[in-house]
Length: 205
Image (cartoon, rainbow, N blue to C red; front, top):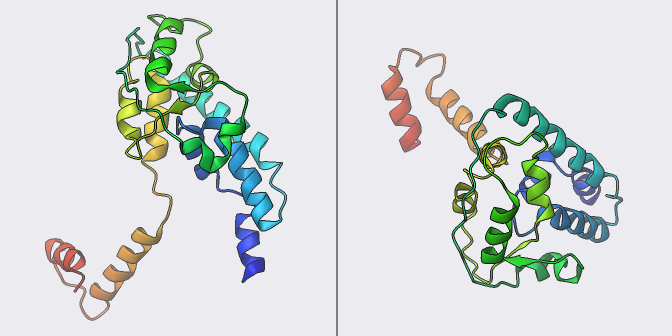
């Protein structure tokens, strides 16, 4: 069992890495620290995964930029949130030398560095990663609201982040639904109407 567990986690799913990068309290620093922690805990080598995930996220952003490059971008200050937090200690990021910012400071700095319109060399992902980690002491951090508040300044990056967060990290629910349906809609009971099948699946009868 231990051997199988280590084999499964020897390569972090790409989607998990993307989710960490687009979490403003972790970003690349959190991904690197998390991989180090996994490698240390499981006694496996995870050093090669960080550059692979980093390269993939930049490649994915470029494809989104090519598709949505005509999306308008405007300069807009973000909402201020002055709650400091200690979340970084969980991942050991408080030891990092890179400057972190509060949400208010982050919003202000981001607004000053972003111009209106679609500038030729503007890279939303680079701007996002270059800003400090968001510092917030509140355990109730609304990730979706945070990205929605930046939809006008980072329209392409926000679209990419929301697409990633909308992907289920597990197929258990879908597989369970298929398994339940197969037991309802079987060989000897295949004349049921669609609405009846849907109702039976919902009540799990």
